[in-house]
Length: 225
Image 1 (cartoon, rainbow, N blue to C red):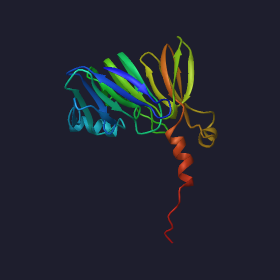
Image 2 (tube, rainbow, N blue to C red; image 1 turned 30 degrees about the horizontal axis):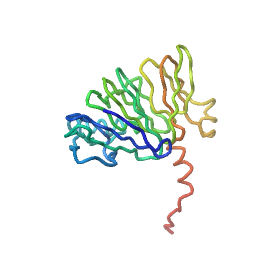
Image 3 (cartoon, one colour; image 1 turned 120 degrees about the horizontal axis):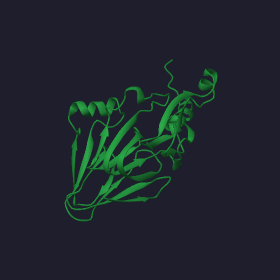
Image 4 (cartoon, rainbow, N blue to C red; image 1 turned 90 degrees about the horizontal axis):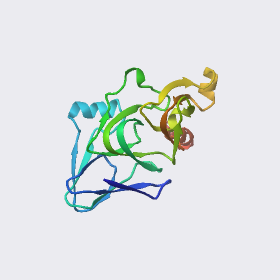
């Protein structure tokens, strides 16, 4: 598929141009528009249990949509729920992606919502990582703009977990609190992730949880008295 990113970095949308018979899997609700030559089918992608694992463990939609081009040059437009950017990643291997950042992928790519164990981490932002592997194209979205950093072997970058989007296989990471527990709870930073190269990492310039932390105290409170 050919992917053209438009209107970024604030309100990006992805225009996918497909060959006849080509299929694309996308998150439920991601479709913005499509040409008449695209057929859509909704399923749990692997059955009810796999859909539940993706929804509960991976933070993704229970259902996914499969779009199939019925003619050459069929067009599919996708957009994320939050205002931000989109990046297309030609994949030949494995990516680790923040749930919520996965938008779509071509047929040769698998999204493993079972991935976990010692490498899964939870933070105050509720971050879960998905293992996306195979050969094909992956379309990722962010809240805010996307910033890429190419880490050299042994080079380490520290990122707030709420700003992570994805990283390539080969990047090692560890999660820790910022300073003392007092700093963790009162600095507004929470937990951070130390990522060590070689490999590429993608960051987002805004955090959904930071925005909610700013917004919720300003919402009108119901008066039950």
